[in-house]
Length: 312
Image (cartoon, rainbow, N blue to C red; front, side, top):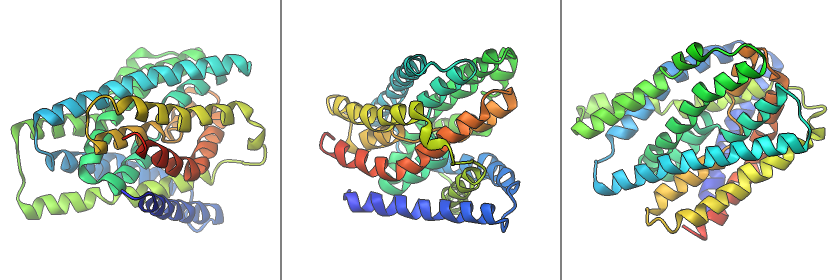
């Protein structure tokens, strides 16, 4: 797919982000509306998007191979990025709980709210399928190990609460989608089209949500956060491009590789601000990291796509 297309898609998405930002910043959209939008996404549109994208696939040996590569890549990349996060936190002498927040937010990405819409727009339903597989690993890590470590860093560790987070609409819809895929279940056209159309609302709703979240962040001192800028270069450019090079040797198709690489290149996970806030951790640091990485992704995502295309 031509580079111009992905740039156009990202520009479209960021226009919606800008609308959400301006709307919330001006007071036209009350900031608390973002919580309602988030619930609609997580409980309705996103689960439908995941299920319908999986149902549009045909199970085959190629699908199984690509699924394994997507899942394996997610595990390896998250471990590597977490290690980079811990190392950089030590180099920049970050103390707890900021150290843990920095490492976790470096390891995970906004693979749902930004990743799914971008990849769906660029690679269609097939790309979205593998993006979802990557997203499952990302979310399992975040809602289990991630939540546990954030709470532990503040002295409020709760393994039981972390385990409860694993059972959410996102993971349930993934499991249901896989079951339907394996059984080869197909819905009547009118039902599938309706559910699919509702699921596709996830794109613009997600962008509005991100814009409204960013409107709550103070940017006056962000430029001094050297620790964030340094890791963003590794997280959102170097590691994804290296992954593209390594994936070129796996034999999986370009769409699968492209979806995986773009997921790796996604900016910081927006939900980290919620997790750190609930745990009483460094919520301002996570919010600033989210802002920096999301803004920079306007340039880094097209760059990564362009460089990755040379390998895949």
